Amino acid sequence: MKKHKIIQLLFLIVLGIPPSFLKAQDVVEKPTLSLTLKYFNDNNYTHHLLLEAKSKIDGKFQKIANVPAKIYITNDADKANLLGTGITNDKGQILVLIPNSAKAEWIKSPNQNFVAVSTTTKAFDEARGELAITKAKIQIDTADGRIINAKLMALVDTTWTPIAAVDMIVGVKRLGGIMNANETPTYATDSVGGVMAEFKRDTLPGDTKGNLVLVASVVDNETYGNLTAEMIVPWGTKSVYTSNFDHRTLFARRGHSPIWLEILAYAIIIGVWSVIIYLIFQLKKVKELGVG
Image (cartoon, rainbow, N blue to C red; front, side, top):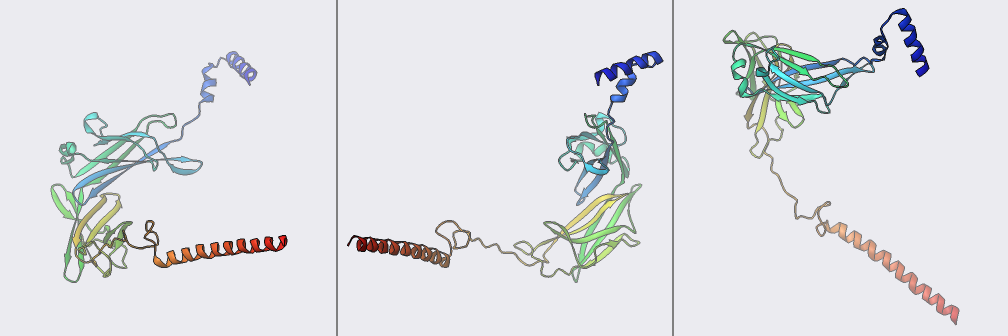
């Protein structure tokens, strides 16, 4: 292999081609890193951004971990506009809250831009991702008959304006996400930005007071991002937690197992030892008979 390199180098010198050409041949091209930003308005109270890093490897897009990146507000990746820094986790994500220090820049316009810039690593060159959103919010309320009303508003110039024809999910918050209020999965906002959903989860368990958390949500909208609004209502069944500690249960500590289980266990032990003792006496009798 070394001899082949020397011959190739001599050949290039004869042709007048610089030896650096050989080094260029040996350079392995890095895969392209893709950065995607998502915006979240959480109950009109907090706002955060989610950065996702992906790359196409072996023909498939894969989540890339351990990528250092910085996230800025506005298109200018200047230190004064820095929102936060981080390194992507095993899911290829970085979550950054929009801090109060960005308030001055945030209120300048009804539209906002965000920029993510990654740091060059051994595996990837620097990458850049951008996101433009229009500020929006959801208002949620209820009416008689367990009706949920939600309204989508966007900031146009300096006025909050109803937005039509945007898909919205209306339901109740559960551990795994949002459970739809009824059989309808999504609703499109009408001309005044509103949707109406009837709550049909009558037997859904709530907390100790029967409270449930209603949620109206817009998911991954190209213009407004991800929006949620929540409201607590007493529409669930009361959940009363009963502790089994210090009670006789199948998986309780020693001495608190069910009576029937203890009887069964002791009966087996007594039965086994009874057979063993019986056999010992029989063997003793056989030995005595053999001696006689």
